[in-house]
Image (cartoon, rainbow, N blue to C red; front, side):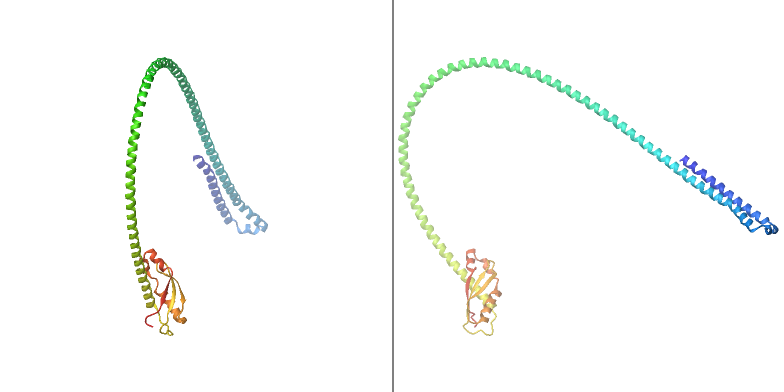
Length: 336
């Protein structure tokens, strides 16, 4: 920072001196121009006036040139100072990078050495463990060999005892087997006699039970058949009643929704085929047998569409609703 201040001070002093010199020259030239006499002015040639004027102006041009040079020198000095500062900072950064790289290298070297030491210690421990394991294996194998020898000796003695005991047991077994065989024969004969008796008793009991079950089954079937016929009859009556009521209700709704055409005559009637959805909406209406009057037939079809939907259809059982998927309705208004 002090170098920068000293570098800027020199151009400043040069500029200050130049300004002072310029002021002095201007003041001195003005004084001289005032003392020149009229005669002197008359003797001066035009060319001399021009030369004198040029001479008087030379110090100003020189001063300006000096100022420009001083400015350029100051700029160059400033650039040099900045370049020097930049190079110094760059050198500092490079030195810092090298220092960090060296520290990292030393750190990695220490890590490598520590890893080598760890691996050596691990290998030593592994070799020691392998040696101990081999010693333990040998000791165990020797102990197992001795135990096997002792076991074989014990087995031989045990086999001798078992052979003797087996011979005695075989003799006793054969005697016991003969006794049991005789007892079994007698018991088998008694069992067969008892089984024959029980089989006869069971046969009789089964025959009686079968006869009883047959009678009960026949009675139950007769009762169930009668009950089913009665339920079917009652269901049929209910279906006829519900379907008749529904058809009468539909007929009433249609007649109430009917708009009488002007050309209607007494005794007119039309047979309609109606198709309903399970929800009671009218799906389709067709004239099966017309009245001979197109307006009357058309009004009958319109009355069915206007009367729908027949929501009471939802209250019927599914098999009762099936009758209204497609049915015929004789449209014969009572007020004709």
